[in-house]
Image (cartoon, rainbow, N blue to C red; front, side, top):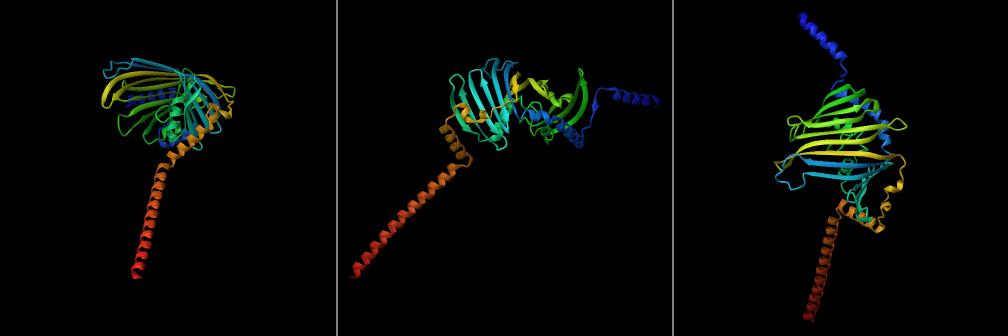
Length: 355
């Protein structure tokens, strides 16, 4: 009995002296933590609402196994540039591939609406210009391509939801929220499990820098039973601007996955992504959100508007019914005219017979 008591006391001493502190995982504790988190995030998120960022992205993918069904090169590499503007609830992202192709996305989240354009940087000609039909899909794509303006406070997988929205999803179960220290840095670690209707659950963790307004410093997502089949980790490096706001300088991804063709496994792949910020400032010219800044003519703009309205409001169906109504009116008019002639002819015939 005395031995058990000593063990309990020793465990309590170790717990109190541990650098880890468990904050609790009840829904109430989670909401309490998120309120503190959002209050600390105010200046960081406001900074990225009015900013210009130029960065360089590199991605390398390697096949780790001998894939029988794939004839692609074992290693693939590409490099590109990212230009991002944000001002007054408007955002623009330009992705320039290494072959010179430039894809431009301009979104107005408050609307929501926007437009897309593609051109060749070398020829400086517009290949395509159109208005956005599926806004949510386009916004998700812009987040996945741009990453830097959102990674400090978003979960970098799937729809790139804001962290507070991701942790409140019904398929996410927060297991632990722990305060810890690592290499002199004060961190908050959030352990969670992601459970989908199909597939095995994924185990994840997010490390927030408490002294840097709770920005995301590192995160990982792995399969609980087969970690060699799926492991996705990302890291962020920060620096402080003159106002003491943490600014992302570098973003790195290390991902290992088992790719499938239907139910047939192809093999494992390893992907590394690195985005390095080259320039960042808060001086944003409002003209960059105008299609004219890309040399888009008014005829192309009017054509894009017409195409957008045509699909958005299903104008094809209305045109079909209008045409059908006109045809029916024409047929009715022809029948009425023939019937009138027939009646007049019959009346004349009856008058002649009577005479």
